[in-house]
Length: 538
Image (tube, rainbow, N blue to C red):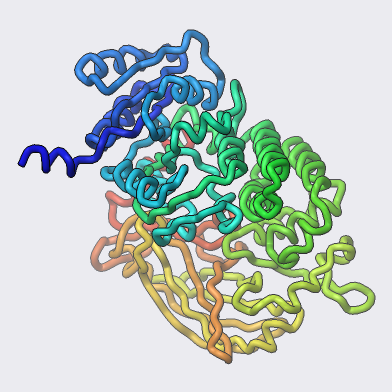
């Protein structure tokens, strides 16, 4: 009986490499989450990158009572994440290896899910769902959820080009001898975004890959931390320089390995992800940053060839990239920010060339927008403006849908569904549906917003989500551009029978979309004030 029970237990086959630097507050939680994965974990290799905050001592004390834990203390700080990961990889003795950062955790069952997928599919690599957990709110956002929607076995990465979008190294299990046979390692030293290059090297070796929908990694996002992680610390232009360099190397690695489709997909991913993310924040930077960023971006995009631009030419990232490439100086930043939003919004002016063809602007007629004339209505970058005006017990929401070179008129907008969605947990709040009325250059709609009812559903931030419905049944989900001006609703206290008072703060997000901060009652008001003070002090 005991023999049968032992046969059912997973064999210890996995090593988890945990890296950390001056992270005494979190590193033992990370290590414990790896040890708690159960008997499938043969060893945990914790690499301390010359910490000065007592991290190594905490790890040594934990290792004294845990024989599976090995602690390696580097004598000199490497300045990055690649070198300590390579150090840990060199020490691994197990058939499979995973990587874990000191400020993150592995959820229960992660190793079993990945190991079962890898062995069952005879795969060199197994990947699963990573969730970004915003702290302290606890809001979770799945990373590349489409890629991990179902169980799948991919014989060759070229059969699933979407794989290039998941550049994380930590939500995957690797066969150790596969990495060593192909000499796949991380860039050494101070090399931000080392996982972008590492992931490209993995895909270039054409492994068989197993995908699982299970949650296998929890990425903790601490935006208020004194020392931001590399992925969050985007205030300096050196961060953008490092990011473009990592993406350039990934492209060259894939192309050099003969993975042309994956190399093209990597360049498309840069336009759709990296470029749009940084454009949304560009207006927040000073003039010197914007000039340097623009110059770096134009130099990078100048390496793209005609085929790179020809694929899906109406995609928002490609349109934005062509505007940057066409202009020597930063320009049209508010409009580019809107185009970089998700979903994209192409706001006026809607210019035309001398022959009537749609173009970006009168100043940049060489940036053609003709591909929009054939893009499906459900994928058009529709622009909707929104304004909130005060009322006795709430607000009046006014929407304006802009025409787009005749495409919207031909589709026939009939109605719009409005929904306020809580940012932290995704709960749908107050909803309304109303018809569109034709107006000069577009269509308009109005609806009341019951702010006390919204407050009763929860304190926090509520994002406005719209779904525009057209004559033939097609619909398009959009966000709304937040208008500001005299007479519009600003921060105010709204009377509430339940809470006494509700504090409401409309604002525009980084991408220009309308959102509401809502705090019911006196305690809610005080919590908003305290949060604002913390932000100012930080």
